[in-house]
Amino acid sequence: MANGSRQAAWEFFGTELKRRREDAGLTQADLGHRVFVSGGYIGQFEQAIRKPQLDVAKRIDEVLQTDGFFERLWRKLIKDQPYTEYFAHAAELERLATEIAEYAPTVVPGLLQTREYARAMFLAGNPLANDEYIEELVKGRMDRTRLLKDATRPMYWVVLHEMALRISVGGPAVMAHQLDHITTLMRERKVLPCASGAHPAMGKMMWLLEFEDAPPTVYTEGVFSGNLLDEPAVVKRTRASYDLLRAAAMSPKASLALIESAAEDHRRCASST
Image: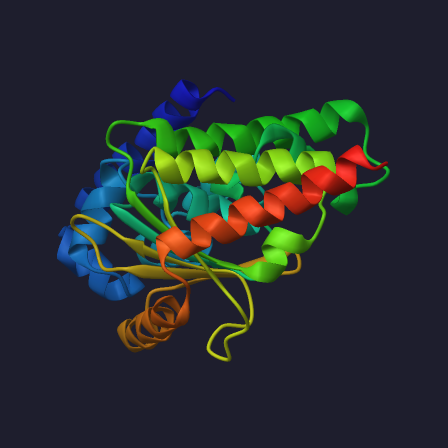
């Protein structure tokens, strides 16, 4: 499903939600209270600005007695998009964020990846997949990276563990090109990366997402799984941990030098093979 038609389908979701909510005699605040979100969120769902998570779609069905209509529509729309189900909602939120703060402990994060690095990552995770499937995954990843090229791009902080600079994904030539790409983005002031060593506050990949008119959200990812967390106390604690991590990391200038040095190490390795 193309992006335009997918957006139109989400607009249909929102129109139906509004119609059935009003038929039930409920305000946005009434429905939000019953499905454990704010009335403002319901308004954003109805305008197709924000997409509900699956559990919210299920609760809407229960409250409005729609016999699973919104759950089925949600599943259809998620199935027809280029990301895995556990990541799909995070990808939608990423497009709405005004600030993204990310921690990458082992690999270069998706928004910074080159095509060759992304392909190597997907091949490693799907060694028996055909080329068409791998290219579809790569295309979805590259579509995400356009976010940093937009004039309205969010402020993007990323703390890279040094391990992410040293693990040779796709071989030393691919890795050298990947790190050159990061340094180019740094010089163009499109990202604000810092490099760091180990830190006890963070054990896996994590994003902090800030929005113009919605509460912040945390996304964490493990092996074939992801979690969106928006409970205020959890978000506050995660923000504090990230701030400590960023404070302990190298400055952007020192980080640039380290990344350039790591790129040269990979380049020397590539030229010697």
